[in-house]
Length: 165
Length: 405
Image 1 (cartoon, chains in turn brown, blue):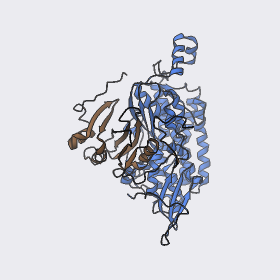
Image 2 (spheres, one colour):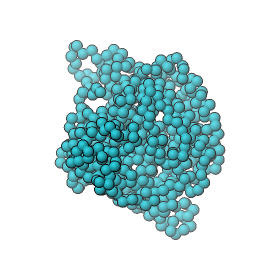
Image 3 (cartoon, one colour):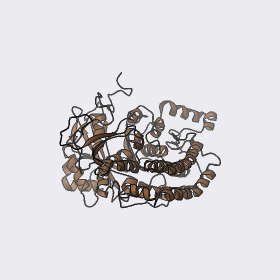
Image 4 (cartoon, rainbow over the protein chains, first blue to last red):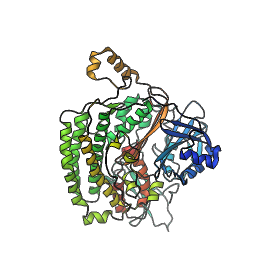
């Protein structure tokens, strides 16, 4: 089963309910799209992430009402360094979509989506703890996995696997 | 939805005189917290005002470790995440990497994967049922459940040599052929297991003490369950009909017939009924898998990814070269990313893997179902009694290895 090449043309991918809804609402928030291995990824403008999530959650045709996962990828040393990744699921329609936001390496911060899904609370704390990405508007942005006085953010690529000795 | 304030008062902190509440630590060494879960409870008499889960005691940095290993070396790490359902974790990881590679898995391997996964679900639900009942004061059920669980663990030992940390699935198929006599033994177990479930139900369902401890306790509405990211039987107990085995079939689940038990009450009893029904559905799927087990290879035909048979490796030059290359330098996975979600006994278990085209994963992230369910715990407990916190913890079936990773 050879892999099909990824599709990055926004016009071709418009039938997907998530992209259709976003383009209908405000096409300027969509920076790029990619359809690879049966999964749709949409890169969203950084400032619009909370609104985008709210729009997708409240969409009438295909409400992406469930936040499956929220995590981050560190692309050190290239810039923009961080990519915050949101996996959404539509429980009524069983559709999935992945949203991504690129963040700069110097003091990365992004608006929290806890007001859209309270489920984001722990996930954002985990990303803050392990990557050092700040979420503005988060009700309780504290370390969750590492001790409170820990130095550094272990999942960053410039953090050694064995830790600092 | 009520949010936590930035800081919940810690014991010993100065408090105003009109403040009637008390802060109580439950765990991390409390027997009913199923591991090293610490709950900071703010209580007003017997009533729980606020619950703040504290996790991270078991954090071992598995996600970071994965980045330093070859793809095939990550499989044993995945067992250790959710140690009650090792095969489910193996499967989620293998499926994700196979999706990245675009690898086709032969039918026998797929059916074996379904068979082992349903046995894993039975194993996990038996531990849950035993400990949950014991938390609520019913000791006998625990002994009965662990009797049957022992049989399931013996099956794991037969196929993989390990009772708990099985690592039986490999990228591209299975590690070994199941041994002679394996299917007959599983068949015997599958034939008598429904009777065992009747036995557990006879002890619990309808038992007035058990009903009083579970009915109407720790309620969670469907809206809250979705907003808080609850999954699996916790979500289905609140009336949301979703099961990834049916809605997004993987590894051949589309060939199996089963029902998805859903209850609308959203209390501890509803979750109990969902899981006990799942035990019956799972054993039905085990029967189907045994009846329809296809013949054929157990590994994909991909010599650059799948290790050759031992026999071939010792007799054929080419196989030896592939073996040497896979062991020493791994195999390159085409760049890209996938999110593979499967239905673990606790809910949606998702693996997000990013590949940069090398032999080591660039990023592996596990979406643990217990981590998601734990967020719903506070909503369930607030306003209830302290004793009901114990019932609520049992009903969401937390595994701390899955939360802390």
